[in-house]
Image (tube, rainbow, N blue to C red; front, side, top):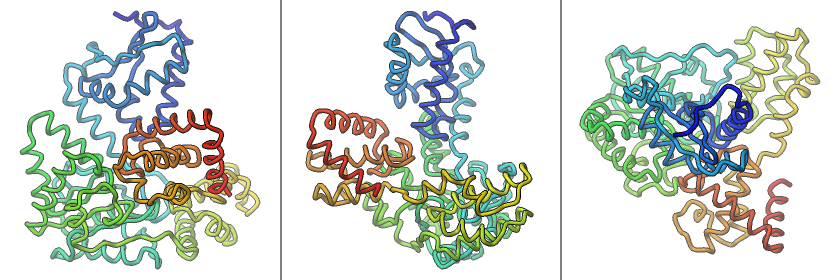
Length: 477
């Protein structure tokens, strides 16, 4: 039995705080909040450390997916720690009632980042409706700001917006599925939310489920654990509209992909509407089963291009009016020129300068904007993407770019892929799971191994180090 923690063990508590901070940074906010935040330091005896969770389900999940990394982080913080054991805290009420704990873990994951096509200058509470008035109780949260009225239309997103509006307004299924794809922060999630809100207003009798592919997976896992898959199938295969966000997440998840395939077929055969979104078109989703790739392309595939200057300026003008603050036109033009990566960053930039002006009482000028946003502006001067890293590495090592996402493990393919993963970790702000998903849906531990391997090769082989440094300079240049 590990010795219980004492209030005087401040050093161990400080180390635990740093370990938690690194876990949050590496795995991202959503994963941390769902699976790692509930971890509690339970005790230590010599080189053995214990951390507790409130349920057996969470213990199994954490032990399977995060235990090795947890032990490595602890060892780096405190070399005396040799092992970390994840236990269930039987003193907590949740341990005796595992189902609510499972439900909480599943529900927490669903809180999505707003992939908004319009700026957000306030943060009202996200709403969740359990009444049968058009939104199924298994649906994810809907943001009341993400409606068609608040979506600014431009040339880069007009097809996607028109298709989404047709789906929401039509009494028949116009095209099935509607597949929306585009980069981060361009408006896919905004349009998904807008469809749900519009259907709820116009046709409240229709049952709608909107959720992320990750939430779909967790609900499926829960049904398997509880041995009630029939209830799961009944729920998802009888709705009028099923909307699944970030469908690329199911790549590599064989059981989830199989279940989703049959769910899609059942809804399609009943002429029920399916709406999907992803970061790439169906034909470019490496690792997706061919039968699913074919079905995803049956209906309308609508892409959302990177925003134009005119669209970015229009979004800023609309949101500046909503903020009730006087933002000079020159400042809006400056932001539209300098921040072109995605709408989400554009929204954040406008929010920062508006809030700063209201709190400090200084007028908004280009000079104050430059000073306040210098970190964001510097990052946008040269933003390296994982796709660009993959392309450069493929060219440098003379392989196909598709090999970066392929399951091939031959050394002539695996080594360039490891270098690309290493550079993605060095040159982007993406978390390890996000990087893994960009490389054919690989696990974050694969990315960690690649980074470690490349570091070892750089230390041992000067020619290899020169290769990596050359690629890094080309990407940063």
